[in-house]
Length: 118
View 1: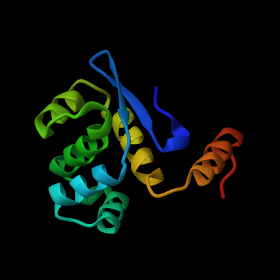
View 2 (view 1 turned 90 degrees about the vertical axis):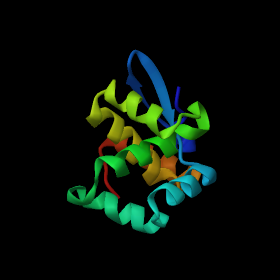
View 3 (view 1 turned 30 degrees about the horizontal axis):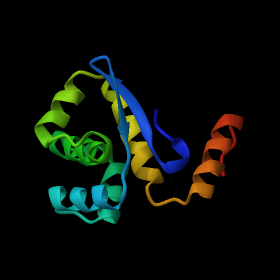
View 4 (view 1 turned 45 degrees about the horizontal axis):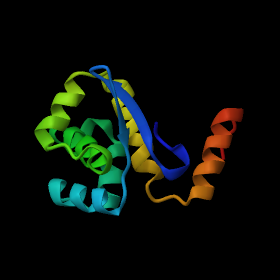
């Protein structure tokens, strides 16, 4: 099970639960795979019209590296077996929290539970 306080998120695909986590190595691999810096990746994620299938697969792949060690092709196969909305909610939230402290993530999670926005 994903530890949300550590910035991890999970999704189910093909009857298996996958944990997404963007640690330092995953972010470096993502930069290498996309040719973009983390700030540029974040910027691109804000404009869904600029997100390609190749970019989405690379993003999911990088997030799955730490816990699953999948290849790009294997990550694409996992994505094909799951609900794209669920997968990208998990990937997007994991990416967004990757640069937050545990305290900031706890605060965010508490706000979600109470329906507050900061």
